[in-house]
Image (cartoon, rainbow, N blue to C red; front, top):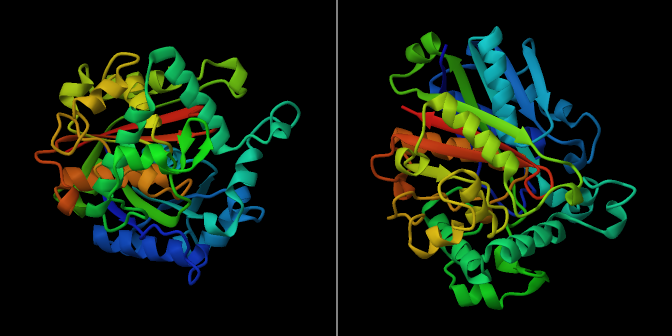
Amino acid sequence: MKIGIVGVAQTKHEGKKPKQIFADMIFEVVSKVLEDAGMVRDDIDNVVTVSNDFWDGRTISSMAVMDASGSVGRDVTTVEGDGTYGAVMGVMRTLSEFDTTVVCAHAKISECNPRAVFNCAFDPIYERVLGLDAISSSALQARRYMTKYGATEEQFAKVSVKNHKNAFNNPYAHLPLDITVEDVLNSKMLADPLKVLDCSPVSDGAAAIILAKEHVAKKITDNPIWIKGIGYCCDAYHLGERDLAETTALRDAAERAYKMAGITKPLKEINVAEVYDAFSYMEPMWMEGLGFCKKGEGGKLLDEGVTGMDGQLPVNPSGGVISAHPVLVAGLVRIIEGVLQLRGTADKRQVADAEVALAHGINGPCGQSHCVFILGK
């Protein structure tokens, strides 16, 4: 049985949304996703919400968006992780017993202390007391990657330049920038080797998709986008128990997704990729884990222009996570951007003749857990 994506929607991703609470953002995207699919709330059988108590600053934070998500009188499942994992849950629920499922995610990071919250992700006995957060832990990974495989700060800077420039073509992006490699290299150092322009912004935003069984999807639209393959895998929790330069979990997740989708040569068979580049070094590193090149050659793809808008495999034509980072929402946005590409409705960021798209999400410190979707017409 095939599952199709028949509706997508996202808010503008911004540094602050002072005029909207969580429920307002979810009501906005759920209303828009229903409109996109030509459906009404009574057409939805099942709802999956994605939220996090720490980020939202309240217990059972999913309850704050129940009414707005349209879950009253329906089955509802809550996922506390990246939006790609919410989509996985949505697929499983749709395959099991429902015809249609809304998956929605929200983030209002402007109302919390993100560095303090992320510190809570680490082991409370051995690691949390060190003051580790997303930036400092990722700096450890970036340095390890540079040391083991020879990746350079200049190559990382090229990611920031490329993706921030792409963001000018995306009306939903938070931070489009016209910058140079030198601008990135000369920006303020936060945690060696990561500088301000190597890091994603803190963003508020929300997103939603509608999933449907094949026979229902074909009734809803003449152009459903099919989920061809899914793979996900989790690595060790403690940073010291894995080599941070390796992408073991991502390789496993990608291999599972490729096998399901029948892909044997990803660089040749995938036309566009949206990867979770929360930090600039992540894009080349994840490209290696996704099998687009050999270990240590992710930077070479950048140097040769392979991942540019006019390259063999455009990566993050939306501007990526480095240009808009609503935590939990960002992975679902990668799926949405893939759908828009395959529909041919990505406007100025459209990749020509896109037939197969890859969307990628992560959970946990330094890409502890990865989720890969392969989408096709």
